[in-house]
Amino acid sequence: MNIWPVQDAKARFSELLNACVNQGPQVVARRGVETAILVPIAEWRRLNNAARPSLKTLLLSDVARGDMVLPQRGMAQRRDIEVLGD
Image (cartoon, rainbow, N blue to C red):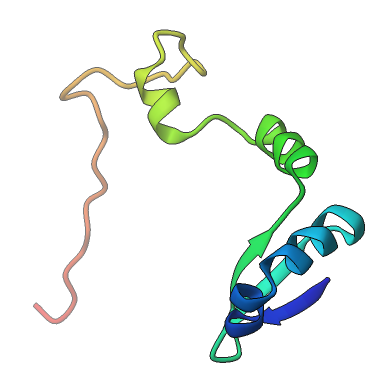
């Protein structure tokens, strides 16, 4: 993966795009810190399809994702903690 300073990425965007398509993902760095990455669209789609559902999708889903057994209220057992120094 090549690292492009942001100034070069802006000035030579067509070259950056061609490198991405022909060589794979390209990193853009701002002040020496890797900040963004340009990936070919086919790679992006593959990664996006392989990703797990987002938290928002899970919370809005009407399908249960697992069985969770919760104790009835007031039935939880408490541990007595001995206070030292009394």
